[in-house]
Length: 241
Image 1 (tube, rainbow, N blue to C red):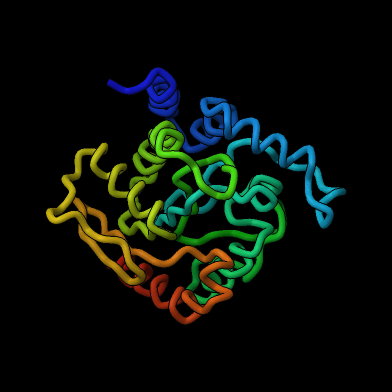
Image 2 (cartoon, helix red, strand yellow):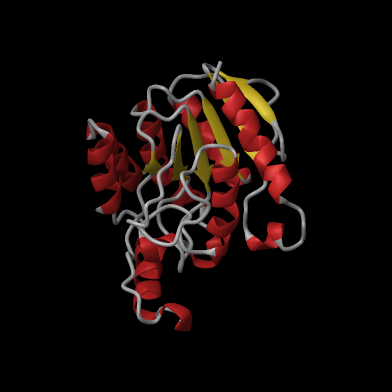
């Protein structure tokens, strides 16, 4: 049986009839006390470079095209990135690496993302995450990920044109597989393993893997712009079929 908090999130998520209603439900969520405390503390304490900014400091809803055929699944908001701006992957180093690749492959209207209302539009794709609150050390616990998963389940249901899921990192990969299983799509055996460029067919969806565009991957060269753009180009090709 699900834990009470998980059951509550599932009920709230299932009740959402539109993406707008789901976004509102996500923004109001306080199901994980540790994450609530951390995201709000980050918004109060801030960092020097953003000391004059007003932080969002709430769960971050999905962002992008409601008719998306490609869905990017990240890990969680950054404490001083989307926890500050309120928009997925906006305002930090990961986003600075991600959005040029999306722009180069036709998914983004511009190559950078600084804040909500800066003119950025996503075309044919939507960005979501496994956890919707910024976690300490960028590491949500297994219980926190499980509690948040119903939001991802419902978001995918509300994206009827989606056919390609791009997991940004192994946590996004695992979240995608769990979500597809929850929606009735059997996991292939053996279970598909995450890797950069990994690909798996699950139900009507194709799941693609890429290393997360975090600084520990991009600064070391583990993930380069050509590598990320190749995955997005593959996603665009699959989505066009």
